[in-house]
Image (cartoon, rainbow, N blue to C red; front, side, top):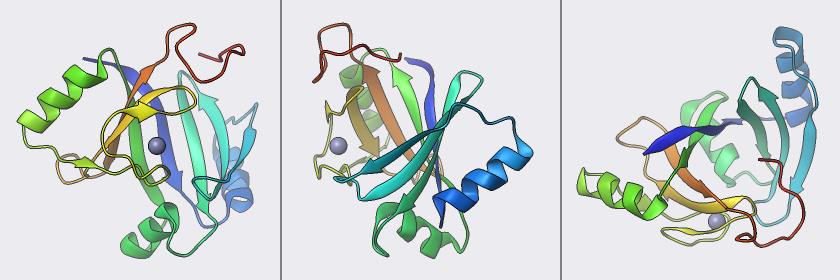
Length: 151
Ligand SMILES: [Zn+2]
């Protein structure tokens, strides 16, 4: 059901300062910076091995990443996104075993919906200790854009 980890999102107070710390400890290279209007966040994305790390800073005190830091008292892993073969089947199984769907904080949609790289859905954090994101990566021609895809 799970093919791999797509990304690990880390809530940070200041993405520039956090990136410097990550670069000091790990061999971080090829950093891509993003300014997401809909999610109201500034992010630095890079790969460590096959897993993408996303350092995420909310613009607003009530943004999802700022709220995480307020709730936990420190920066930390906000969510893990798993690459899923069949998102409908994976969600059905997770919900049957006690998981609860939660709204996408960017789109306010509950359940599978389109993001830039694939179909996504979010689960409440009670079962795994953190927010869980499922992503079914688009096959060629299935996504919103027609440009070349990174993955
Ligand atoms: Zn969404």
